[in-house]
Image 1 (spheres, rainbow, N blue to C red):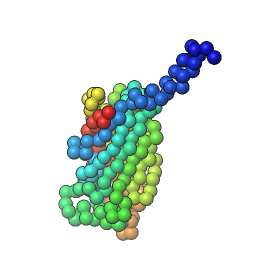
Image 2: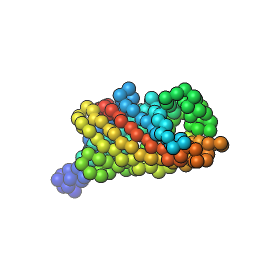
Image 3: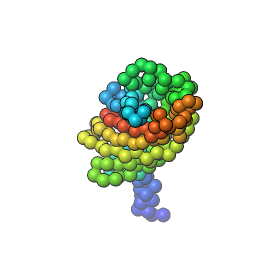
Image 4: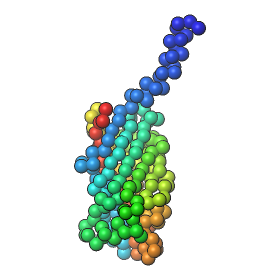
Length: 189
């Protein structure tokens, strides 16, 4: 094998590894980020949030095939407008934060929808249930050291076992819950 053939062969072998190394690594700035939800109880919206959301993201708009998203939510950080609701959500019939301390989202694929809008397909785990989920999000103010992500998705609470026993019926508290997020992302490279 000639020297040129060896160089070309080595280049083709190393190229995919170099591409992997080029995807920037990011983390969620939990102090500057918001993760909220809106449920419907007796035909009225009930809003809440989680104070602690963390995660790592491998993301480049120029190399979506290498993108990975891993987000973790501290379920005990649930917050709402009144303490009785917070206490109820932490109970075993709801989030059961003693037994299930975290919820996670892990992407399997990220695709561009249009301009600065993307879709992450992956799996969401709440309690002991892991289900597929597609999340649309926009990326704003993309710079080499930070960017901003906003989005929204809908989930069915009963599919994850949230609201059991007397709360399993969707008559009083609807099944669909809107999850919205406004995340500040910073570089860890």
